[in-house]
Figure 1 (cartoon, rainbow, N blue to C red):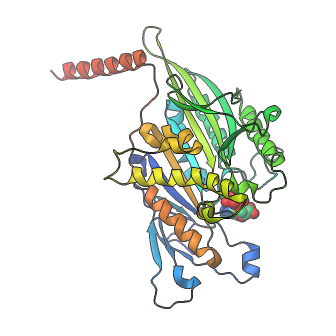
Figure 2: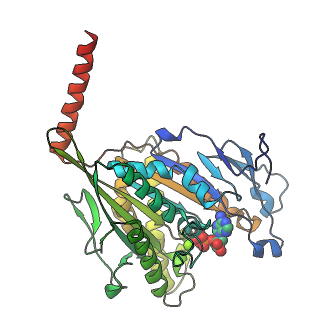
Figure 3: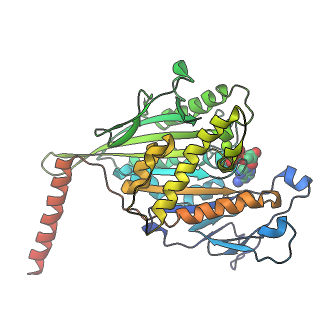
Length: 399
Ligand code: ADP
Ligand code: MG
């Protein structure tokens, strides 16, 4: 750690113009672990400030003809940053506010296995079940977002809110409900419907959540079912994607007794380890599995690459090619807002994966979208007429 000009420890640096962007990319660097320190692994990631990261990439090969690679993001969380820092400075609060207003939003953690995705989203294992310490410094972003969401909703006393939550897992291109232990391991279908305004999972449990504790119970139940379903596979969690979704419907009073209803949502996505994309070469019985796991991650990468390239932006985006991208299409496609948290290890032994993640994140930063609120067309018309009246009244004032 080093000192800032004002003598505080520097933990977060930013390069903000972020409130304009609907894809916000931040990087979180975890501390070097005890194990890494014990085996003499060193930190090759450095923080020059202003949202920049430097990686002494070739340190790995020992070649001396190299220049450290430099990357730049909206926000960089250095190893000393806390879980609360991530809520406060990642743009997550803005995402929650947008979801309340009716936008479809996604927060996803991307990075190699062991880089801190699950730590960032849910905190250390076993923590959630122990609600005796509700404000533990280790509680992750999902828990903190739930608290913030309820705080925000309670401030809007004239609006009626209905919250529902679902929690699913995509493993080997199969969608599994993490809230329905009865049908556990029985895959569900992903379908498209006009009514749902996009893709949805058929027969997925959606639980009504009236209170904060109901949302936390959903998180706990999903985490419990996920660990039960593991079937002694060591690297199960590094091969699956999980999506926890909170649906936020609201009715707010407009004029003349008319109500405007909006339906927003927020997805929290813990992705499979990004190193999985390179395992397509595996042989034998793992091949299909490797391909399928890769499929969602690879298609996501391809969608991001296409969306972020100004020359290709209007071309076909292959959301339909994987389960994950189908379910995230509405946030990525320009109807919502997305927060990508790229998680990296600072260790020399992880240098290649770290650089891969930073490149992926840099690409995602180039995506430009324009979010729209999901609204009944009639209500949208009323709102737009109302805006027009406001404009006319204003013009009248100035005559
Ligand atoms: P992933 O989900 O990406 O595979 P984990 O979240 O399980 O990685 O993190 C791997 C290990 O590193 C865990 O033991 C976790 O507690 C620890 N860890 C990750 N990020 C941090 C952090 N920011 N601060 C402290 N420990 C962390
Ligand atoms: Mg994990």
